[in-house]
Image (tube, rainbow, N blue to C red; front, side, top):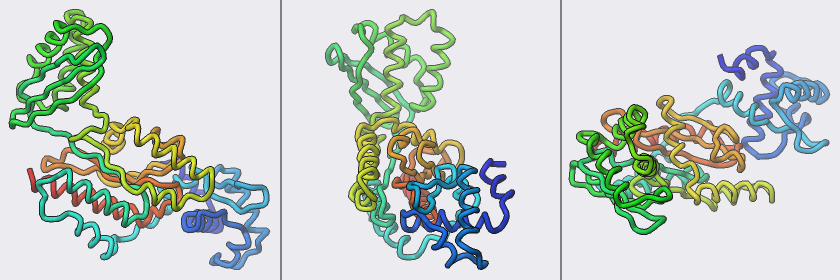
Amino acid sequence: MKEGTSILDEMNDRSREVFRRVVEGYLESGDPVGSRTLTRSMSEKVSAATIRNVMQDLEYLGLLGSPHVSAGRIPTQRGLRMFVDGLLEVGDLNAQDRQKIDETMGSNTSDVGGMLDRISTALSGVTRGASLVLAPKHEAPIKHVEFVSLGHDRALVVLVFADGHVENRIFTPPAGQTPSSMREAANFLNALIEGKTLSDLQTAIRREIDARRQEIDGLAHAMVESGLAVWAGEGEAPERLIVRGRANLLHVAGGDEELDRIRTLFDDLERKKDIAEFLDLTQQGEGVRIFIGSENKLFSLSGSSLVVSPYMNADRKIIGAVGVIGPTRLNYGRIVPIVDYTAQLVGRMISDRS
């Protein structure tokens, strides 16, 4: 049982209602909620003093906080997590939102990049937040790998896939690499490569390195590791992060501190920091996941929330993710079904194409 759920179970009806109304009021307005405001909306008639006592108890539990001495309360990150896990009411996707997302798909489904660009723009427009789409990697079996030196600090990895697709990716090789070590690394990879996708090959290589570490020249070992790092992606196509809606987040920001957090968020995104982690975050099960503040390493400084869902190919393998990012006071109940529907739609389109 989750900690938040057990705390909710131990609350009496009044405490649970005060907590729920404070969180819902904050998510709607972004402002602290005071005891006098709650006296007008509680299901039972109680005094402001009684509500203040309940709020103090909830603050002691770490669920509410007070931004100013004389202000009302806002939920803490822990409180938001408990609300999302135990009290959030997720609505159905309304027809208008569904239509806007459907209309972006277009008829040219063979252009996956264009489709994902349109989806990202639509998702941002519908949610009034910032959207992100992690595009899929090319998952055909690989036929051949080659490393080409471009200088002391740049190298090219050429990936030839069994379906004829060719990718060239530039990366920074380890210090001291030589043409012979690069050839040895390529030979090592090509000996393992037949019939394997990049994901399969990554697993096989790590297993081989562990088993044959003493046999592999140190520089070749480093080259292999560098090549693997390239496949994790730096936001390049075909695995790339599409972000839309910066203006939306700046518009809802509520002050200098909030604006600074939003700028920090987009600075992190534009540096493509930890982008590969998005898929890792979604691997633990199907469906929408919600990350609040520091629960997501990428957004820990900006204090933002991420609502993200993976999408799958025809083999039910996770190949990408779509999501919405914004301040912690997102309208989770509305955004969750939008993200869920969009992820399912993208997965179906990609599966039909393949």
